[in-house]
Length: 388
Image (cartoon, rainbow, N blue to C red; front, side, top):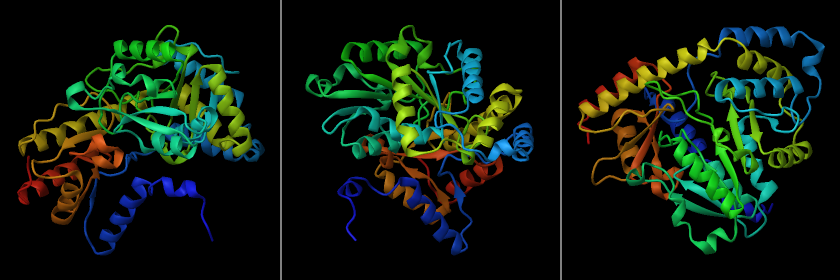
């Protein structure tokens, strides 16, 4: 059996290796405190589950969905965007249902990247941007995100020869893995840059409802003229603790949304209709559950940051996401520190270089576990003499 050459271009998916390592340790009897994959440990809100149960008893639930998404779902997305961001979307041609935002982000390069084209991709970043650009035959051009530039890409430094071949510009704020945020000024700059260079601006907004200390993230579509050049990806996964439900949306520029919908019509049969109809309840019902989630994760953030800082770190409190971007002690690498805390403390973190070369020197910790477990992790580090 001879595999396609394209498979040799991509590494094993980062979190598959992490899950395998965790499974190995658990089999050995290790009590692993898992700060790895960003999968909320909180339950899906009861009113959403109740609606799902009701829908499953109907004949409609088992029918084929439309690949672009049920119109009722797309209409609910439009209303949610209007209420949350004051952004007007036409549900007919500016909204597409996704089987989770990852699916849409992965398929988008196939719509716009030809062999030799370039996608401008933040570094570090969600691995899907880079991997699926490569699978489409494109060339990722990495934009370093560093503490010195507040983890924002320096667009003005992209070489002219790269811009001539560039087709896509990915942005992701609030950011995975760094937890960084941006203001409207940066979004305005990104929109202007994309317009100037004929780029499709691709915004990944999966963490918009995880802002802390009063901070409310913006949609790029709030920027005047953004809809001319931008497509935005969102998901119910983090907002409503629905990661396994696989439901999300792409919104914005109707040409880009339409291209994605056309591709999807040939690749999948759409998200399970019952999930779409239950998602309407999530988007249209009470949002108290979203506020409750935010308070829970804000409290967990405080426990971890206070604990790490008591051990010598000097980490500012992230304004959004449930990720902590933690610098490793002097003399360590991302990989060596990850291995040390796993072996000595039974604590699982993700090495920053798994998100790109600029992630070296950091580890990512997802606070998707109770305060008590977070406090236990800090205690284990202290007992092992591990600090900054």
